[in-house]
Image (cartoon, rainbow, N blue to C red; front, side, top):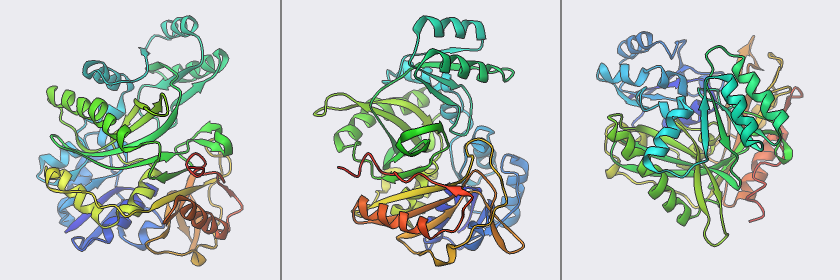
Length: 422
């Protein structure tokens, strides 16, 4: 098969790495790709939100299967455009991708399907939002209604923080804001493939959103992750499928917008230790980043078979085969991220870092300038390792981190801190 992966970050590097291992893959193209991806696949300069350009490229290159990595082209309707010309595509329709594109849409689905989630209210009138905020008080969660690259959320412990977040969001013309009850507990991520009818769980993970150790600092797109997530026990996963995933999929199908692709449920787990329960924090319509890096490390070549079965409506015929191991990734980011940061600093030392089925450096924001690898984004590398235990994966990943020579970068040193004591 000729396969096209759309995107240019760490998630897409991980997807390409896994797909490349499958013998069904004859030719692999990633658009636009990055410096690391170019070492394992062809890359193409392509505006992935331009449906006309993508469909023309697919026809010219004889592409058989398209995997859409990021959310923006999904929301723009790229999956619909490809399906309309008979191309097999992994990713939901624009209508179904509203589960990520609109917090209000998701909350309305939850209300209709009786999915457990936080109390909420949505506003496009700043004065009404301010009045609601003063009435309910803090702590509270302030969210941009639309896409925000994982960073449009402020968990406000007090009213001044909440007011500032609200004003910042309403400074954007046409903004819509969701004010939400702050849930307590432990967050985790649950990934399910859906083909419009069947749903197949394919893994759990925990991300680390805050920029600095100890969960301090601003929210980011993710500073590290590990899989599996021990808080998502078999009992909790069964509850999630019964009360969150399946009701959501049924409601989407009832509305005539069946969901096809990967559904990423961000969850909050709370309650008594003997009987914890999960509530939905949010949905994403694509693999997480950096969660994809650890999931793909453990899935390997079968990831292609699973995504293809999903796209072709054959999920009922496949199963996930897990090794009894763990994976952990540490994100190296440019100093200043998620605020202002410099681009163009040289990254050295990767030639001495192991590169095999248990050790991989996935590139996110990198480029090559005059033969030198340089930083070209905020999150730059995802240093990833597998191990028989989470401790082993942790130690391997940080040994790789320490081999990277990049003074202009930083990372958290506590990825996995919740699960390691377990």
